[in-house]
Image (cartoon, rainbow, N blue to C red; front, side, top):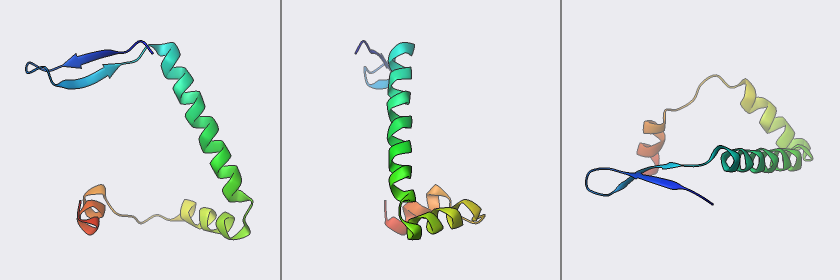
Length: 72
């Protein structure tokens, strides 16, 4: 993989530049994996119901709240 690393003044890496072709390959693999995982979950009636309920849920927690609850 042909990556370019961007660093700050101290030489610490702050970003990575990924060629578009490689990025599209990564995204396609992630999409396929997510589709396979969802397909697996939908085979179970219990999980199918849980997923349906989760999609309708309006309330939630911020990431800060989750971090505080988990102590991270």
